[in-house]
Length: 376
Image (cartoon, rainbow, N blue to C red; front, side, top):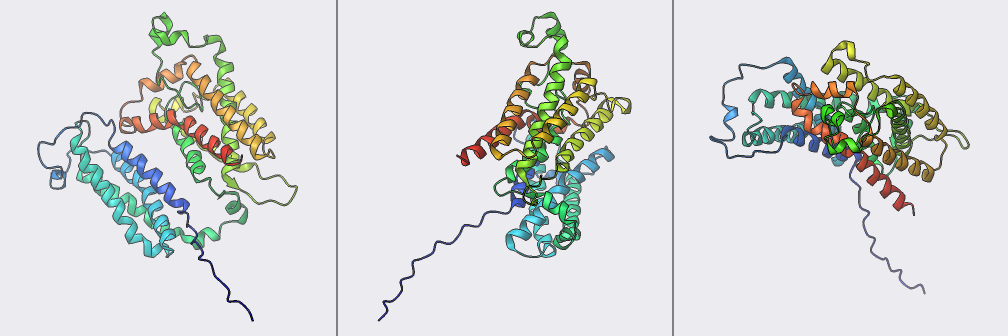
């Protein structure tokens, strides 16, 4: 006679949120920060916060403002569409209407909140262009769809498969080229805690910061070292974030490492052309920078087959040392010229890009530290 079997209750497995939700949250937070910058001078509005909905159309507007509002909300619509589709396990087309609603509500809320800031002016035109940008992003998500993703070459899809638990690292990887738009005292540098070095005060020695700055004769060497360290840090991050299945004993492909580097170079050139003029698009590409690119590429290729522990240690050392160098580096003319002409059309993004460029290495160190602790 068999005894009746006893079935123990099985704890339901916890579903992890899709990676697209993390991208959506990160990008929405960036939009909130940029829309309410400088976050000072809050006041009670003289009239209703929603008067901008019935106010006359603005007399002065530029194509730059319209394009910026469209492009700013395009990724938000794309991320929202994909995140809702994956969370609800439905087709992207069915998620499209539901994705537009939160995007429109976010834009409406931020425009209304700008009524409380004297430095910001809410506008119905901004609201409409934001919603149009989100709708364009949703349309791209619907057009691309899962089927078109599956049609991509297998090597491309496998090379950019995010490793489990590395979604935050992928966000940091995308944020690094964007941070290059903000001028730093060294090429590809981040983590400048002092933001700007007044050249007159530093030259006269009256500023306390002048005592920390390295002599000018070391500038080429410091810049080459900082560039090579940045390349090593990004290469280690790419190898940690993306999983590329390869045959046993074969090396993983090295070409994905070049993509964020090329993107950063392109952003540096575009920023120089926009801020200083087309003649200065490649003003950042000095001889020291070229040497640092070569040295960093050689070191990155050598680290391709490295173990995860070696990769993590290399990344932490590169980020930490690079952050120290950028805070000790002497100012250069190109950097000071970028800072002097930075305000203007990009003033609304000044705070967001400055915060991103400053906090990026510290977020990287925290993320790598957590990865290493999880492997102990």
